[in-house]
Length: 184
Length: 122
Image 1 (cartoon, rainbow over the protein chains, first blue to last red):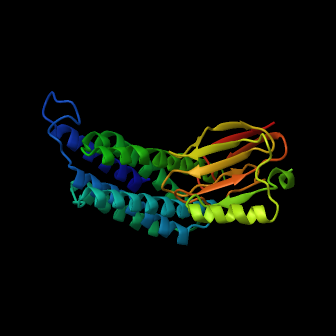
Image 2 (image 1 turned 180 degrees about the vertical axis):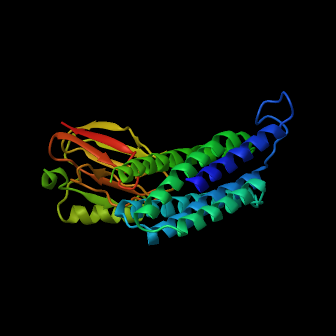
């Protein structure tokens, strides 16, 4: 839980950093943009790629069949979202550009991965699902508070809006598994 | 129940070309298939934004129900309990079947359990 909590804190800290970068008195998303579309694209790609990698780890390492299936769904869905995002940025002529936020996400994911690798069996399953709950909560917060308010291109913003239900469904699924695993 | 529920179950790709569609119709006509029963309707359930729309659908036995996946990720329409199953529907793919028996049938997406729908057959 320690690492997952830090992952969430990192994303929320990034949200707060961006929020304070707005000029005093300005409404978020209206002026003094802290992230441009190229940086948002890189954050989307990083966020999806991270969950694909954690999913691959869990697919190979989890013991509970439901956890394995959930991991496979994460691999399939986040790969599909990334492909769709790739099509969009190619069409828009945007080249994803790393930012403090995307680099922070990658660093945090690496730390979470190390913590997961230290676990095995049912303990791994619970740690992975706890990570997924926390991760998807963080991503939802980032979509709402950081990405959608900053996106300038209407199609990019619409993509972020349409990805939100996927993240929400994954979160509900992970929370449900967390309850089941806790009870078993 | 399940045996009578999907007698005309037919998986069909949404991307089937017009020429392919014409060929299928011609082939079915050649074996004496006359098309859907007279008076039967075709209903569409869109899978979009991780939801079945409409979430609850009322049809008559003999109507055709088509599920179309408008999302970029794969989904299924799977009876719960699993009396029928579309199998994996990728982006833009569809699946149809003709319920023959009346009843209320709950279904889910097998990949995303928070996605729930209901089919009421009169």
